[in-house]
Amino acid sequence: MSALDVVLTPPQRERLRVHLGVPELSGIELTGEGWHRFAVLAPDRVLLLPRSHRWVPGLDREAAALPLLAAYDIPAPRLLGRITDDEFWPYPVTVISRYAARSWAAYENSADLVAVQRMLTGLGQVIADCHSIPVSQVPESIAAPTPHSPDPFEAELRHFVDYLEPGRVEKISYALAEAAGLPGTRVDRWLEVIRPCLDLAPTLTHRDLNEGQIMIGADQQVIGLIDWESAGVQHPLSDFDFGEWGFGIFAWEAEFSTLRRAFWDSYARARGGDLPDWRAVHLLMTIIGAPPPEGLATAWTRRRRQLTVANLRQVDGLV
Image (cartoon, rainbow, N blue to C red):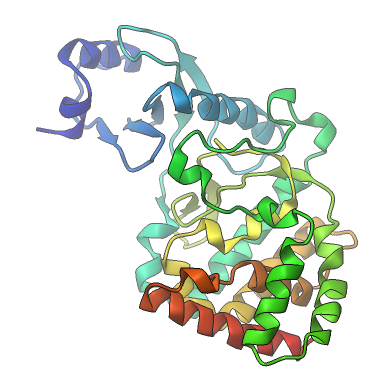
């Protein structure tokens, strides 16, 4: 029995066949990998089915974002339509184009440092194109920051914008300086260096970039970004936060200075303008990415704390 048979009743499968315009559903797959939706995979399109009413607003945001991205030739899925059919699915279904590609998640376990650096270089260019869209052109429905997730667990997760609260970065910085054996006076320098990063003007961001959203083509290059449910006008560094990623990227935490430099320099070249230096970005993201002392319950988080301190000492010597 396939996932399609498990999730959809026979009448729903018949309605799906009608909507796809196919004589039968062989070769049509359903995946439930996403937290928020099921995806019906047809050869030339994907149907996105919200798992519950809580996730309908996210699909609405994506449907609003995709035409804008298409207008500016951003490599993202194209909106093919929406389906409102209670006999097929109780919530509006979004239909998008399908990439002939795999996500970075399929490659990262076998990737070496050069491959990760190449991927981030390509990703930086794509993000720059998205951030260059004039905010005045963003539809009103996504012209505000992404709201908190309706899922209680997700709502507790920290995002980049959470660190913009007054005093939060300063508090973390003093604790890290002590852990790194550096004088507290260095924090004043850090705050001076990262201030231009914090003051960057809002842009249209994806805000949920991770290994599952980055599509890689046959030539191993980034060819698109998927899952725009969290799109909104917010701080541009929201798209540079490895805290949105899974475990894979942190296998390279000792090399984050190399990776962030490739990531940011690619972005800065493509976007242009007066942007902060990569060292400032690396310093800020190192600070906010540190596992808190109270969260060091596992060997993995304790190791990450050690790597954060080592990275902080290294970048402190550069600024």
